[in-house]
Image 1 (tube, rainbow, N blue to C red):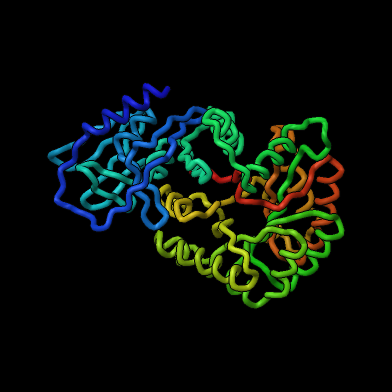
Image 2: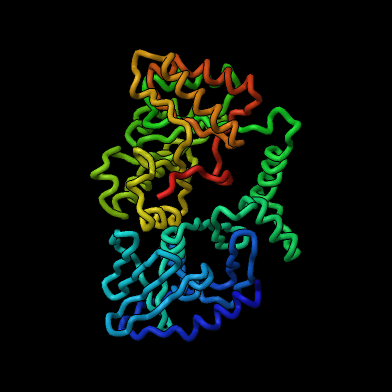
Length: 388
């Protein structure tokens, strides 16, 4: 594997793009490890660019790692990336990206006569995920064939390189891996209760219910509501719950208008949470879920800015049934049962609503009776995300 990737890297040096564009004050970062699924290569000599929190890699190098064919169309001044039936086109001069019938803006850097762009944009267009493990640092590219979580991969990497890391990330990762893999322990099953759009007048009662059952949850909150309900938000912290950003406007048109509008809303929400609680949380959930609104470039932008995006795999639809808690309970538990058959952890979407208050105790009791521990989300947990 090392020899193959090293050969690809050498070939990437031959991939020359001619451009008059020169970017001032380049910031070069080396020492990265590039990982493909559960394999890794020491890429300490690889030239990496990090600008405003975004990681850029050479297009040819990165695409070849994903076993894609890359060609520079000199006449058209376009980069073509082909893998199977997929065709991706980068127009570096106009900073445009074409894939799957979609045209998007894309950030491009010219360096050493090579085109650099966000590794995540290319990977996700080719049906891969990219995660950044800062303790490596490791840029990890993975698809469904990957068997290790990021925490497990970090441990494997440290064992292979002889590195020791005693920070809280490593300690927590080890604890969580043991928790999940101990099948004889009744707490080996984890469920996540999540609440959107608050806090509001219903949130205090929700916190009382959670406290009664010794259950932890995660609240994805709107900036204005955080400002208005500061005591409630601080109580969340005192009770051991997790906080995340949900934006400002909750408007599809305003939130998804551009990369800047998304980041501005998330930064505003996060900043308000930090001001109120002194907790700087990078957990986030976008309004209405990430599909189909979060394009690959949008996903790349929020991830490269440090955010960890969560969707859900159980929808209580509590917003739809204001006077029917029985329906909410039935819908929620039926989805949990299906996930249990697949051995998947339920991530349950609720909202801070009166009907949720009526439904929540029964759902919690069902989960606890079936051996689930109700856990607050952390940035080290593998997020559940909708696929494009």
